[in-house]
Length: 146
Picture 1 (spheres, rainbow, N blue to C red):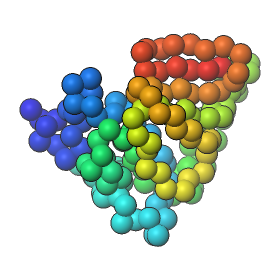
Picture 2: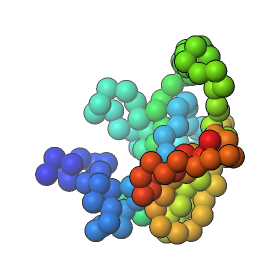
Picture 3: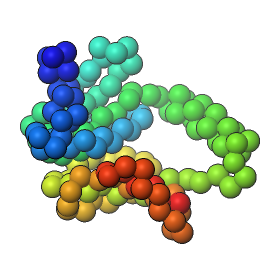
Picture 4: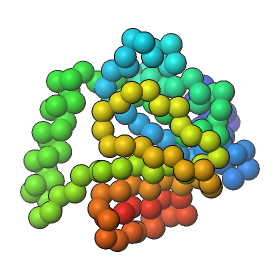
């Protein structure tokens, strides 16, 4: 009941097999360019400033797209922390090279920095590409290629 009353309407995404809403979400970190700011609305009920793409309400069959607001300095600090922990934890750290999103319709994206996002028409699925040798099916809708 609470999820239904929330403006994010995550109840539709949780029950995606019945509602047709996409269970996939794409989160970005940074600032929205002023030219694209009218495509988003602010959700700050959790504390951090999260910018939600307006297509999430108009077209719930699209993957949910949102931006966790962060300045360049915050992003760089996080990048350094992650890089250091990967070097310690893994002998061969991988980097996300590509995100493959499958669904009945493409996500609405604004310009961003990061790995390419490739859309393919089909049933809902998300594939994270780190390498090319092997694939791990985490669930029906999530594959990691390493």
